[in-house]
Amino acid sequence: MADPFDVVVLGAGISGLSSARALAKRGLRVAVVERDVPGSHASSAAAGILVARGVVRSDVPGRMFYTRSLDGYEEWVRALASESGQELSLREGDDFCFFPPGGKADRFRQRLERESDPARWEELDAPPRALSCAARGGPWRVFRFAGERWCVPSDLLDVLLAAVERDGTLVVPNAGIPQVTDLGTTWKVVFAGGVIEAPVLLVSAGPWSGDVLRPLGWDANLVPVRGQLALVPRLHALDAMVHLEDTYYAVPRGDLTLVGATVEHGEWEENVTDRGLRELRHRLSSIFPELDLSRAVKVWAGLRPRSRDRVPHLGWLVPGRLLVASGHYRSGISMAPRTGEVVADLVTGRDAPDDVAQLSPLRSSGGYRRIP
Ligand SMILES: Cc1cc2nc3c(=O)[nH]c(=O)nc-3n(C[C@H](O)[C@H](O)[C@H](O)COP(=O)(O)OP(=O)(O)OC[C@H]3O[C@@H](n4cnc5c(N)ncnc54)[C@H](O)[C@@H]3O)c2cc1C
Image (tube, rainbow, N blue to C red; front, side, top):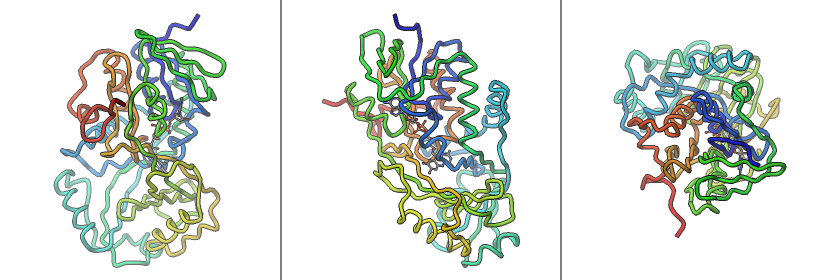
């Protein structure tokens, strides 16, 4: 006989695990079925940047959801550390955003003027001295954001997984691709070595969410966007992040610097390519001419799950039965605390707040469609 679960989650990336934790905190019995090793895809490949950029108001779909998630991050991390019995902390420092003079810098500034607390950012006359020896290109327009945060996603995933398992949630690793059958009032999930039944199914399978949902009659409208990254010897002495045009970045990781990332739409292979590394070198050497990727201690790639309108899919596909939490694109690490809370709110019947309505997976602008 199948175990009595309230919710079965497919996918143990950060979206599935943060949801499982929040559901278990509300007293629900949760099982998570993971095709591979928990957290082994985008969620540990990520850079771990958690920039808030001082945003306090915005009509852009998803942006206030993102901001609210970051507001709760410190507390979430403290709770995970305490629940798992493992150490976990965030890093904090300045974030310097470099732009060549021109339209992109103007638009970036206009957006900050519209959306951000003026006390949280400034445009500098020149790059800071500690960076100017490394950052020799230019001329640059440089924006500084104080008190921004970043983390090491693989550490975060380890702690999150430990917290979820300590809570009594069943996490099934290396399950292969499960077969999912709709039995009317419950879902039957059959995988290598077991069967789980539950009345609610949450699909959090990253860019593969479409593969899970297609046999159930849904077209997910999701594409993978590959990102390639590298860890290189430290590029500068400041404990600060550097962004180039809000796309490429250099983030301190102990004695090393993480540099990333390419943005390759439609690529399903999670591999590093010569072309991708050349692109990273080409783009970031405009700020850091010394960047030498042949000295990288590690290179890797991950697939970001992107919806058509670049806004996450978070909500019911079939009310009370089939839920999706995916499509977090470049911000799934940042959005994890609030993703979990919202999933738990929806499953326990609470009303979703305004910032979540824009994320409905049934929205016309980029949501799921029934396969005719
Ligand atoms: C290069 C790169 C840099 C990034 N940097 C940042 C950053 O700095 N800050 C930030 O906030 N975000 C960042 N992101 C985005 C973030 O990593 C993602 O949005 C987030 O990890 C997505 O999490 P997920 O749980 O939805 O997907 P995933 O981590 O991909 O997890 C999905 C899981 O589902 C499993 N699965 C697939 N099919 C099935 C199935 N049929 N049954 C069961 N399980 C299945 C997979 O094996 C996988 O483990 C970055 C991403 C990349 C790739």
